[in-house]
Image (cartoon, rainbow, N blue to C red; front, side, top):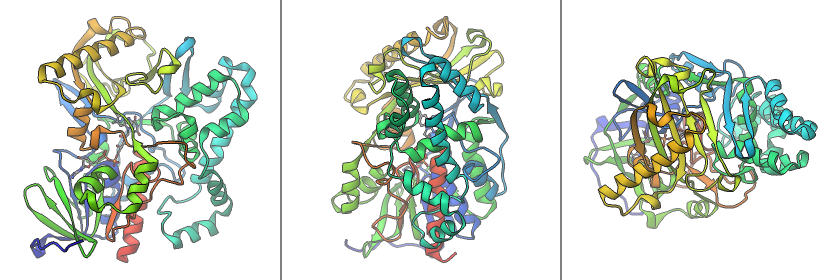
Length: 507
Ligand SMILES: Cc1cc2nc3c(=O)[nH]c(=O)nc-3n(C[C@H](O)[C@H](O)[C@H](O)COP(=O)(O)OP(=O)(O)OC[C@H]3O[C@@H](n4cnc5c(N)ncnc54)[C@H](O)[C@@H]3O)c2cc1C
């Protein structure tokens, strides 16, 4: 690759530049700054957080994406959001949720995932009494994975000395994890369970966070999700999900790190095939010993670097993993009395199993004001409904066609939600509709994708790349690295990336 000759001022040289302030990027940045590195975060948007950001309209504060938050537990080692904040001396008040999800599924299957494990098993068993034994065995096996993870400090699996230390301290937990690393949930579920509808439920219980059925969902991730919801639990940050990134930035600055907004990186500068700096849209150049990209792998290797020089390992990865769909999102403000007493915060709605993975099939719904009423004016709630959709369905439309299509799609979602909340349409006070185009534009993610999903059945998590790339000096962090999507998962990636970079910098 030819060397660039872009001039740089000495003042703009850092130990580490992080491109993007998603939770993965911020955890990496705060960890490195706390270890004494000179860190600069460059964020193209106006505020930090990416898919965990927020926006305000007419007295409502909406979460852009994530609302069901893992990682805020108080014990063990998997409470990575709590730990990331603590590392830079900041904290957040969180509100515990007693139910992770209220499912409204085909054939009248209506059940809740209670925080209390036994209560959850009882409710599931009441729906499938003939599978009593299999249900307990399956979920108990998920706990085995979780207990292994929750016994050890979660850092970079690319760091041999750490691996040796962890193996020495926790040999059984490590061997347990090695066993589950190449496995998917579906194979293990079918060992214990044969009822087709219960297996479809397990598919859905995976799909809502992995965006693929259980056969393609890695067992390591399921061990985390299916157990931590009963251990650390689901906890909502007071003030909205956007607070997580705001607090991480506060912590970053406290330990001497810097962040710039409206700073869109257009190019990763390489010299002698080594990443040495970045160039911004306004032409500014910053150099650093290490560059960490929190953009997706597609954006990193196809837009920030010349696509024709894409490393072979990336080409291979793109054959194994594909972009998941994006979402059609409805951000609603509604009169409070439309929600019956006892309504849960998170809901999943599907009327026909064959539509689980279909475009606009499964509807996800979060009502965070049930936990934090201050996010809406008194007497109102916020509802965020979203359903998978593809960018292709929203391209090449005139602006009037685009608006009409959004209105029609939103109308269909509201009509379906009326079955759970009759009178919803009439109670609407505010509605804003986002499409995959909105996600692409504001989240800076190619095609607005939620992240990578296996294109076919793979060996569990074995194919997911860690943080180093084949370009020396360049690392990736966030949901296109091990272990994948979700705030706690990208926080894991942030810890791992910072650990590997710190070792490489001799910190
Ligand atoms: C609708 C929706 C609902 C979700 N629900 C949940 C949930 O309930 N629970 C959960 O745990 N997870 C949920 N997720 C997933 C979770 O939000 C993501 O997996 C996670 O936030 C991704 O974090 P990240 O660090 O990989 O990066 P991102 O959030 O993608 O952030 C990357 C940042 O980098 C910036 N950036 C990119 N390119 C550049 C560039 N060239 N220059 C400068 N800046 C750049 C972007 O602007 C962005 O701020 C949801 C996601 C969506 C979209």
